[in-house]
Image 1 (tube, rainbow, N blue to C red):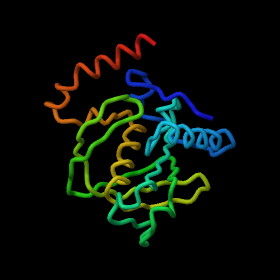
Image 2: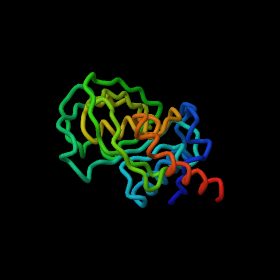
Image 3: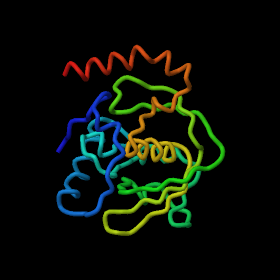
Image 4: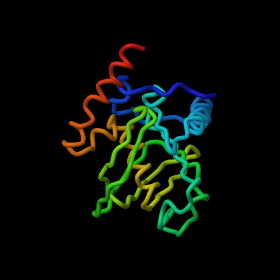
Length: 185
């Protein structure tokens, strides 16, 4: 089922989400809905708060672009991108590499806004799975950026919060319009 994606201004987008404590049928259905919603919206990731759910759950699928990363290790072994896509995880933990880079980002909860965001180039993500197993994913490129972006959502952080001050000022009116649209809906 396609869910409504909440927009900028909705309070759930600013919450530090609750840990997932139980994997049940309801959660499995929610994951299926999130995947359907992400695909319908042409996104590469979706976090539970973006559909109004205050839990630490996210989905990512960057398999449309296998060249979007230069390396992928899963549990310490070299892996192919398709082997873990779509990536579904709960209660993640993230460690960052030292080097940073700029990359273009947008967000399904901030329609029409895209900007260059500086983030660590590489990540090491510990991603508990629904079946109780844990994937430790080390990567770069779009997958690293998507992991950081979606995990930010689980902590109540939006990509616009990570913009340089000058960019935030230039975007102020667009964000104000989005907020007014939300408040008027």
